[in-house]
Image 1 (cartoon, rainbow, N blue to C red):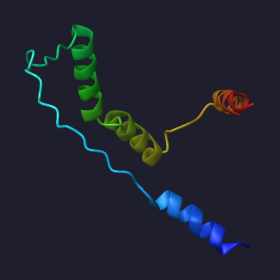
Image 2: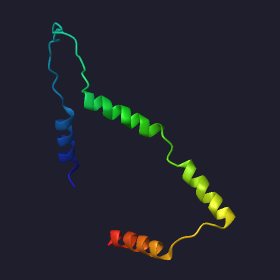
Image 3: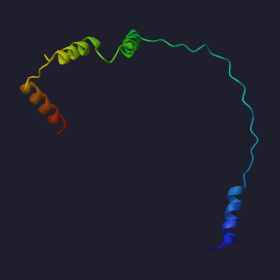
Image 4: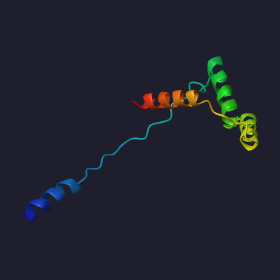
Length: 93
């Protein structure tokens, strides 16, 4: 390995020319920026806010199912269960 060649290359990359630049003046403002939201965008934002504030759990259904399980009246139709299981399995395939 030639160290002197490396040093010469390092010197080339290390040398930086400086250039004098002039500052530019700010341009006169043409007016202020404005934002306009369409009715569709406003409706979307309102719906998004309502969904984010809503609970992910439907307490009424959960309470009903808990009561059925505790009373021993909760039953699952085996055919419905098998069909749902096959639908989920086929969705992955």
